[in-house]
Amino acid sequence: MLSRRKMMTASAAGFATILGAGNSKANAFLTNLPMKAPSIQRPFRIGVSTYSFWHFKGKPVPIMECIEQAAAMGFDGVEILHVHMEKDAEAQGKKVNSALFGEIKQKAFSLGLPLMGLSTHQGFVSPDVEVRQRNFDHTAKCLQIAHELGIPTIRVNTGRWGTIKSFDDLMANKGREPISEGRTLDEGFGWVIESFQKLIPTAEKLGVVMGLENHWGLGREASGVLRVINALKSPWLKATLDTGNFLEDAPAQMKALAPQAVLVQAKTYFGGGEWYTLETDHTNVASILREAGYKGWISLEMEGKEDPMTAIPKSLDLLRKSYA
Image 1 (cartoon, helix red, strand yellow):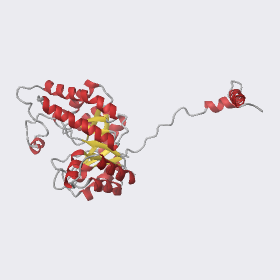
Image 2 (tube, one colour; image 1 turned 60 degrees about the horizontal axis):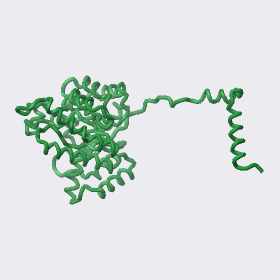
Image 3 (spheres, one colour; image 1 turned 90 degrees about the vertical axis):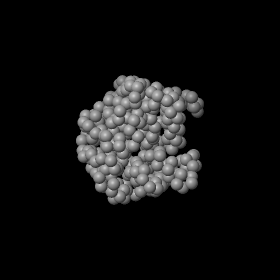
Image 4 (cartoon, one colour; image 1 turned 135 degrees about the vertical axis):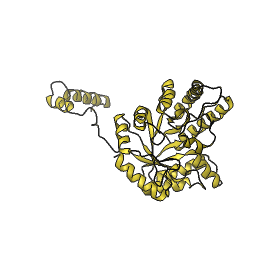
């Protein structure tokens, strides 16, 4: 009887003979094996931000309800607005902790919806070291929250000078504001770059990519967002591209930012925008993204005044057709 070792040796030798240079059939078979899968263009996956259900006015729509409605409406995933989650927990007398994260994950999983983004609020444009540290700590906490929720990316901001106190007034001024007296633009970018440089090791450790959004302040334009990203050259700091926050030369600015995008927030304005209304050609946006090689998520931010229960489904229909 052959030993196990002899049987293995014989089998290996036999296989080598079959695949030998003299075996034309085997060689033909190996030659015809596909080396890589064919490139197939697939529709973008469409998620929805919980911001679409609640615009910071009145009692927050419960996060669980947002997830349920997202599934019922036919979305592919959900992006959570961090301050929305905080306000909802406060309204229900709950704490934002691991127990709550477990409930959210269980609900989303049971409905077949990935949690694909966490949108945060913070900023580093301040000469005050303590102010920057508080915002650093908050961002690090949000990275940890995203990690616990299984979310791969968080939206982050540069921050702004704060010389226009009211956000409504800032929007009326198209997101522009004066630099703080005695300060320079280079100083502002220096604070932002230094802060994100310190956050990158945490993002890498937790496996969560920071997506710097074109979101007013120093990130109002693509050039500002790219200045920060290019200074650090890290795979853990990329861009969140918001279709509704470029108020001049939007297509050109989206083309500039798209190669760095890890998430796209697509705005709609049914019922008129809360602050302004843009006529965005989302089909053109989809072309820009494909040209840049973007294959990630499209996250709806419905920022119109119409009832979310009618405006969000209409928005999904628009995005499905545009990003197919």
